[in-house]
Structures are given as structure tokens and as C-alpha cells.
Length: 553
Image (cartoon, rainbow, N blue to C red; front, side, top):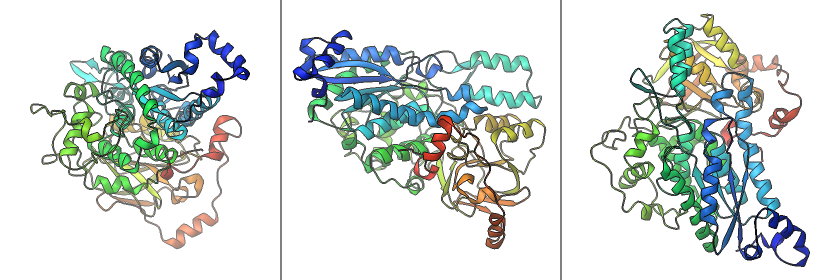
């Protein structure tokens, strides 16, 4: 393999570079070794990434040896939970690109031969996988671990219960004191949100696609096993370097299909659609949005996980983690066993000795699934001609028709809900929240949870060109493309227009004639950009549509 680090370690002319490396701890014996970057999104702005610095140290212990020398660096992360429901959320998806770009820049500048990537929160996970695919030097991914659930009145709770509690309080269903108690108990410590929300979904993707050591996706952040896994990940990176196994050797089209199948079986976050499209773009794999729907029709929903089910990630861990789900899928010929993984073995070889517990109800079997189809569906139709995404896991409604109640931003919709201006039977349309128009494609747990908390979860359909949290449940359709800013039909939807949803037919239709749509567009004017300078303005000019992953490179 090409040894990139020779650019900074070999020859008299590299004396200055070696002098700098000596200052950070390298010695003569290290300059003939592989140089390995160990990168985390560790910080204190979110509990999701609190483990990053500690795990980096353990990973470095695994890397360092006769053949490799590791050096730690870091990247940014933002907290979706903290930035939810206000302007800060516009930065969330943008941070995914910044993470991928920043890792690429350090790897390129410092000439590292490989890397160990460690991440916890929603955007740092796909950002690391995007960087690995783009750079295509030997790499391994480690999840920073999920949090344990909190407890309130004897029931397990998570951050989603707080957001739903806000809606319940505003409607007078619970008291301020009750909401305070939920707030104080929902997040008991370090780690990403406890349910099968976006972070745990993408951690499962990292394992299912072959970029993580088997069994590591479900280990809680507090667990000592995660420290051991960090060291083992560092050791395994040495193997990948020696064998010159690169991310694109692992992240093939078949591996992406395995990852999608796993997401569908777990009832995972709709954000996985966006992120897998983005990762596939960096891996130079032609992954089509409709692949999610094609697989969803044959892959059953098996895992009874929050936000719609009973269990958290720690419960999946107790029965054996993602390998148990993979073994069930393999035995039913739903995943490809021949895909290479970071172990140097195939998926099938990794699963040979995995036993499926017989006395558990966290994960069911294809002969008795939660539902016969996977937890995500792709819709088309006159309102979303290029596609939109609905999380079918946990919803009981197949059809919904009603008048549009249109809002120009998420905040406008939240204000209307709290003023009782959203009613049963409404189709709430929130536009100008797409990747370009937002900009940043805000995640809308605040409004979806508030609607549910207000007792309207089964009676209101929400449609947006923005996106949703992995904690979102109910009648919610996101990623509408083209987005409003790209002159999609959602741009000219008006109050009172009838909208029809049919999940089984995969249709989302705006009940207007072609001539009426044409007439409205003739008089339509794009709104002024919300940001005319800075990173959000730059992002808006570069980003692609949600149907291609909202990528900027």
C-alpha cells in the first residue's frame, strides 16, 4: 500500500516535520511505522460525545505497537437535543459536512495512513463514515455508546418524553412540576439518546455495513466493555493497514443493502435514509432512494424499540446486540453473508457462532413480525414527485385526507399549536425547511412531540421538506422533494388545499389540477434567503436535495 506518512517522516528534507512530531511524543523508532489518526467528536456540549476523549486514549493504546503510531485529534459536534426547536437546529445537518470535511483536511495535511473514528451523536456518526469513504484509507468506526434510560414513576424514559411532556403541559395534561421531574430524570448520564433514535440507528448501520467490530453498536457509554472495544478497534486497525483493506472494499452496494435492511428491521430513524445516501455518495456507490422502499416491501419490522415500542438500546445489548438481529436476517436470507468487514472476515463468518436467545421479546422473527414490511417507506405523488420519507414503524393509519394548514417555518407551526390553531383532521404543511431553503433542513422533534403530547398524534398529518428526529412518532412525512426552495409543489400549497396520503400505494398527492399548479407557479416568488453570509449561506449554495443525501462535496 501507499505509505502516505513517508511524506512527513522520511528523508533529510523532512527534518522539520520530524522535529514537530518529536514534540508531541514520537521517537526515532516511530518514524518507520504507519502513522494513524485517532479522531473523535469528543466534547462537553452534548452527553452523546462525552466518552470521545477517553475512548481515544484506549484506541491509541491498541494502535501503538511495532507497526503503528497513533496520534489523537478531534472534530466538532453539535447537540440535536439542545438545538431542537430554535434557530440553532439549522446548524445540525450542516455539522455533518463540517465533520467530514475537517477529518479529511487533517488526514490530508498530516499524511496519516489510516484512522480510528469515534463518534456519538446524530451527525458525527455519518460524518465519520462519510470521511472514511471519501478518504479511503484503512479505517474503523467505534460508537461512543448509548445512554441508559432514565426512570420516572417506575417507567423508563428518555429525552423524547421531555419533548412530549412540553406539549402535554401546554395543553394542561400534566403540571409544570411533573414536567420538571421528567426533565430531571430523562438523561441520567453520558451517551447518546437511549432509544432507537438516529444515533443508535447509525451505530447499528456502522456495524451492519461492516465498518465496526461486531457487537460494539449496542454497548452503553457507561460500560467498561466499551473501553475494551476501543483498544480492540485500535488493534484491528493495524490489521487493516497490513492487509490494505480500505473502506470502499467494505462499503459495497451489497453492504449498503445490508445496512438498509438492518435499519428497516430495527424500525430505525428516517435520518438513516439521508445519511446512507450521503455515505454512498462518498463511497462512489450508486444508491437510489427507491432502494429503501424496494427492500422495505420484503424486510419485516422486527425490533420492539423506542420511540414506538417498549425497549431501549441497552435491552438490545442484553440479548446480544446487532449481531442477533443480523443472524435472524441471515437465517431468513435477507442479508448478504459474503460482504467483507473490518474483522477481515465476511458477515457470514462473523455470525457463525452467534446464538439467538429463545426467551426474549426485544426482537421478533419474520414468521411473527411487528409488521410484514420494514419501518420506512418512500412516497411519491404530486406533492413529492422526487420522493418523500415516512416512518411506518409504529403508525396504524394507512390513509389520511384533509385540508392543508400551511406554515412557513417550524416555529410558526409550534406557535399555532400552542394557540389552538391546529385541529383534528388538519394536514400541517411546514415548508422552507429543506436543505437549501432552511437552510440546514431542521429536525422537527419539537413540533411532532408537542402534537403527540397534545393528544393529536393520530389525528394530524404533518408534511415538511425538513426532516424528523429519530425520536419522532406518528403521522409525519419528511424529506419532501423537490423542496420549496427548489420550486417543488409544496411551495405553492395553500391553506384549504386537500392533500391525500396512501401509504400502501406509496402516494402523497396535492389535489390540484396541472393547470392550477402551473398558474400558481407563474405568480410565485421565492422568499429571501434567511442567511446571506456565513456558513449557513455557504451551505445553502452548495447543498444537494434530500433525495441525494443533502451532500455538499
